[in-house]
Length: 223
Length: 237
Image (cartoon, rainbow over all chains, first blue to last red):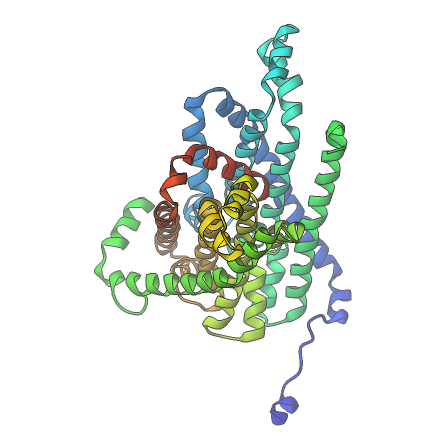
């Protein structure tokens, strides 16, 4: 063992010197990571919200929609990215299609669960007050479903931020690029920094959304 | 020629069904890595989750564990384990095990908590000792939710075992990683199909196992249990 010590240059887990010289590289990866995640969750919500509402309203939509999203969710992300590459190449689009697909089940299911939990008395009262179906949906049902929907957005966001690192394999990746760099060059610093930032980003996003939930649903604050 | 026909030809080629890079060998590697990790993970996670749920202690810890677990990128864990433990199956099994633990702890905790307190009181009143009550009353009632956790972990482990190819592991991931490196999109697509099929088969076989394990008495209550477990999964998993 002692003989090896003379030959090996020990690579520390974080080389602060390298890090201080490569801050722009890290920030660039972080920015790309945020963009990939944010677009995926926002687009996912834009798709899942109407489908979730339709699934709540019509039983016939519910089974097939949730089953289709369930199958998408079961397909391992890397397999989905790989299957898309022959069609859309090693591009941002491939990464986004894969990432969006993953958010759909989580978001749509929480929209349905949230709408389902609206008390029937409230719906009766709304009907009695003369709400039309669309107004009832927008002003009564969706606001009451908001806690469940935001809970879904939080899970989807945290999951997506983790999955983005995998898109490094198809040339995207945000912080995943730094993880791959650490692997290829057997250099610990980018690996450790990117992992820490990815976890931190997920936790911060979760906290921000939890805060947004408190602001958006003031009536549940006591609960 | 479209990619689909080329992939069909790839599957029809007998060369891809034998040898060290053949489908049977890669399947065996993938299943072995996943099964080892899942079993080790279950042996660690289930006793912890069951004990916490039974005593109703450290609920926040049990539930937040899977939230934190979700925030940790599995790709990064694999690469870090590779840097620490070097080549071989050890870093892969260690990372996959770490990944498998949180959903099983959370779901087994929630499963035990969800057991109706009246049922527990009744068991106590009938003279069950604590251990017998846990083994014969609480656990059978917890099977559906508990198995949902095992299923979630299993599908995640099978999915992530694919990434093991990046750190020179075996399994179906080899086709995907090698296909990308060689720009052989036929191999890449075939690998994606195989991984997706294996994940689907894992989900189905564990659902089958779950059906076998659920006692007859609560199979009759299947509908409400399914709804409840869907809610728990929607919010926590």
